[in-house]
Image (tube, rainbow, N blue to C red; front, side, top):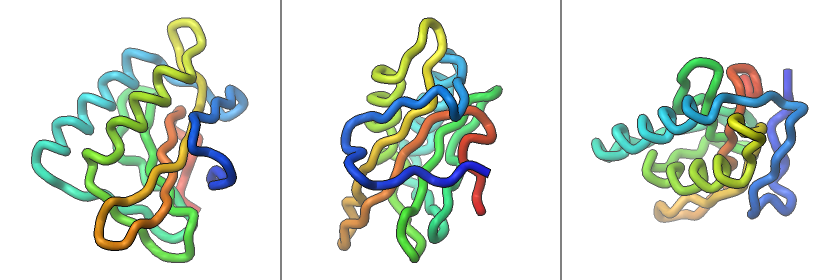
Length: 126
């Protein structure tokens, strides 16, 4: 299993091809799915020290990860810009490489979480 990404200095997209690549058109579909779900004002959550797959098409997935010792939840809308930024920054030809970056919840208490792009098995919950 691949360990979840570290929070250390990940405010900018971090691109690593050794964790798999995913098709760009599938990534765009995943981002569109997040837009659809966000329109319903839904929240997503990641369990302590693990990643939750929040969107999946083909061999392309978007993950939300909790690097902390407690669950983290945020609205789907909060994942969209990070996913777009990662997709734009981590491209390799017509594919993009695995990437991740840190974001923060905007709910009453702000907690860091990681948004990650990759193939199906880049981040599996522990």
